[in-house]
Image 1: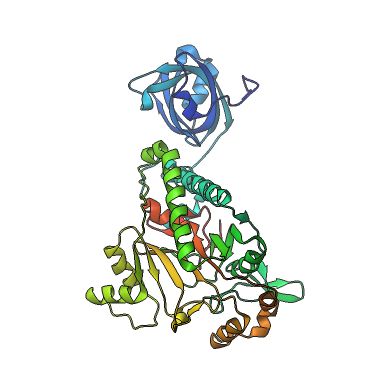
Image 2 (image 1 turned 90 degrees about the vertical axis):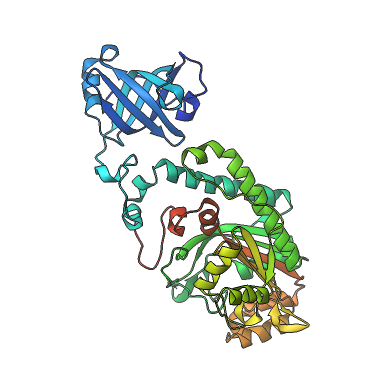
Length: 437
């Protein structure tokens, strides 16, 4: 239909609730629900900022347009001009009395997939129809929170002297040895998708001292659980002349700052979506690996020293620590080759994992900066130093002591908002069985 205004949109839906009564507005978005009462039609109009009630009266609209509106389906794209009116019965106490309505694109979404539907869909069905699923106000709030959280993470790091870097995602060799890689054809060579920016960010700490990267990472993850995927966004930090204690404190401060600022900025939107953000307070409890094993033994879960923690062990620890906590001083053999063993006891390393409940959010530690020790650790980890020759050269050119960590963004959002599956915090998840949409 012909557009009645030179603009499709003059305000966001959320703006309407702050406009004086009688203000003219033009909104554009999607029909969330429609209720036809004969001479009057009630629409809930939705855009990315929220929902507002629109009232269309037969006596106030062109008859042809009003009749066309009566048959409109949910998710049809419309542009509506009208006047703002106070209405105690309307959601939010405000409605828009329609004067002009332009149907920009009709929709035919199966009723059970409509964002307003109360149908209980499986996660797989939701992901198979992801773009419509993402329009649900709850999902919009999740990903707005993720976006704002990243904004404040960058703000904190930038204000604390960090340089944002971008490292290759096409690599020639494994970063962490045993972690599964995705091989790809790279002209006449074999390459891999990056599982971590670890080696590059270590090298760059000898240039900029304090670096961070936020970007996609890839792991050929066979596990099909509620917290494993094959592609995810990592938040990685590396700091020269820092101990593992110092980067733990940095991680703690960063999360408290970014989480509190993001939840404050989106407080109303999270409330409407019935989402509660976990409140983080310092200090995060710290337990050693040995202490974790003692706690687990008391709960009837036996873990042999030197083994990683099982899913059941993580669940039991999550019952003891509801919020964030660090597990420190892991056995060296459980950690990647670049983690520094403790000089007084090389079986234990300067390392940590950050947990929120049962979910591992981040992992880090102090890195080896001595070439001979690094080569020894490569060999003991079953890796060939020749494959890392370009990285090892950097350790002859003045590599400072350095520490850092890597954090999984989707896991963090999952833990903070209490989501049931990591895929709920990824726009288009990729896992062992999913490559589309």
